[in-house]
View (tube, rainbow, N blue to C red):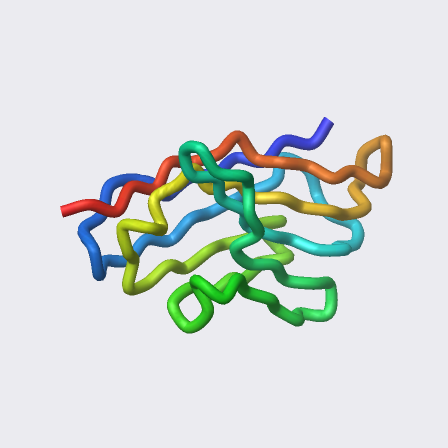
Length: 121
């Protein structure tokens, strides 16, 4: 089974920056999409940013211009660079990788365990 290990969350002041990392335990054969989602208390999980196999990116309106998603295919990793953070960005952030893997079953849609981001003064 494939596991995703997230890191980089924490407490940051408004206006600050954080970078989240998500590294897969197995090698990816081909990527369908990689994404970051978040869930705030009492709210549904929402898409924050995604990147496709071709490198196209898509962002939620609330984070466009402040967040950037990137990936490192050699490390089987995806990152979320967050700038100008606001209190409303506070949530648990989850990474998701939809891909063909070097292990069976070949196709797996995998979620990370979540990392807490708190934006507060």
